[in-house]
Every structure is written in C-alpha cells, then in structure tokens.
Length: 367
Image (cartoon, rainbow, N blue to C red; front, side, top):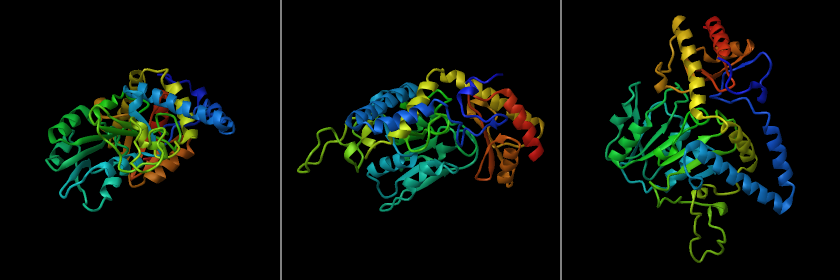
C-alpha cells in the first residue's frame, strides 16, 4: 500500500519512518506560506486585523465540515483543558455530584473537574477493558460522562452512540475529546454536548489553539460563568447591566484568538478536506491491522484492541523500557512516541506498508 498523502508535501526527512502522529505529526510545507501570511497581516494595521478575523471564520467553516456541524457551533480555546474548565465552571455543582471517566483517561479531560472544591466532585472510574465498563459508573449523581473518543494510552476507540444513550438515561452531559481521532476518523460531533480537540496531531496544525464545540441544539441555554472581551457580543460597552455574550460558540474565546495557529489550522484543513475521512480511516487502519499482525506473529503483547472497530490509528505496547525502546527506534530512523510506560506507534496518510514493515523489524530488534 502506497501513502494516501503525498509525502513530498510534508517536512519528512529522507530515510525516516515517521510513525508518531499521536504525539506530533510532520508539518505540511504549505504551512510556510500560512505563517508568512500571518506575519504580513499582523503588520498591516486594521485591515490586517480584518484579515485575521476572516481566517477565524474560515477555520470555523472548515472545522464544521470536518465534524459535520454548523460553523456557529465551533469556537476556539488555547487547549483542551481550558475548554473543559470553562464547561466545568459553568455547572451548578451539588454535594454528591460525580463524573464518569475511564481510569486511564487523559488528564486534560479530568483534571479541571477533579480539582474543583466547594463542593468536590466525585470521580467514578471505570477499570478493565470491557467495552461497556463505563455503564457501571453512571447513576443519578452523574453530571458528566467525560471521554476521549480514542485513548491516548492504549489506542482504544469507544462507542459514542452507546455513551450518548447512557448519558441520556442519567440526564448527564456527554463531553468528548476528539484529539486522538480528528483528522483521520469520520466525526459527527453532534453526538456530544461539548467536544474539544487539540490541532497538532492528526489535524496537522500546531500547538496554541484547540477546537471547542458547543451543541446549541442539546444545550441551548448554556453560558460560561466567566468571560473576556472577545466572549462578549459586539457593541458591548458599560457595566450597568451584565454585557451580553456572543450568541455562538465563540463565547468560549475570552481574549484574542490564537491567530497564528489558526492560520496554520486553515492551511491544514484546506489539505485534509481534500480527502474523505472514510478513506483516511481505511488507510491508517490497514496499517494498524498489519502492524498488529506482525507483532502477534512475533508474540509481542499489545495494549490496543485488535478489532478495527475498537481502535484508532495507534498501536501501543506496554513496557517498563519504553523510553529506551523509543530512543533505540529513533537511532534507527523510526520516530515513535514514549510516555506512561508504553511505546506508541501512530500512522497517518503519509505512511505506507513499507513503514509498517520497517517499524515491525526495528521493534523486534528492540524488544
């Protein structure tokens, strides 16, 4: 299988197998023009600011296409944790309230709620590997089911339709982090009440901006409990009455949006939206399945479910030597990712079956 994306369009070093999309993807060469356009617009005074605001609206429209929602439902925050914190601050928590999470959930999804005081919020943690394990953590006290669509730790993909039904049965919010999915999986964000994603992984952007989605159909009366000048409706002046918020998801954005990363995000979306995400998913999961078969043949145990319907674009291997293994792979020109006691191999459209074979051979030597 050849790459789906033309590798020449990316900053990929000759002789390197880049299989760490779950950490950082290789940058598109078209980002050079986006960065130069940003600094040029920044220098053009008020017309330049008008151009920056247009970039924001273009990025909202692109994300709406990617996630199958309305552009007005898309806003921006600096990172996923900030978005989760804004939602957490808006909830009128009561004594005894809880959230349902997987015990291995990503910290940005949990920490903004776990750190709350007065009242503290109980964390109901699902453990194990059963697909329906979160159901045992949900009851009448549950205010939020907080999940990553694809796990950063194991590469497991959850059943969002089942979790939507579970949230509805308990009267809870469903909050989803799409960071490890957006850019290669088809996504219908409207299944969530709120959703977020970093942009520097499979979405091919850079750090400094994250996408924030507000389901205005499911949660029409939602409002943050804090704001900044950019969150307010145009023309807001004076404080004799509380200023009105923007009517759409840009109320998430308290101050100036991160214009530079948004220029890059637009460049990335222009590239990604040339492809049907079903084709990207089929490509990367052909590679994950091939690597899983290679590792099984070598009797290497993995953390990632073998069923393609239950995993994303990553294959994860638990090892107390994860750091040394990733360093050894790097020395052989295979860029993998380390962290939390596991090696993570992640594919994107610029990878091929040759990358699988080279990675598998290098892993066998290291393991």
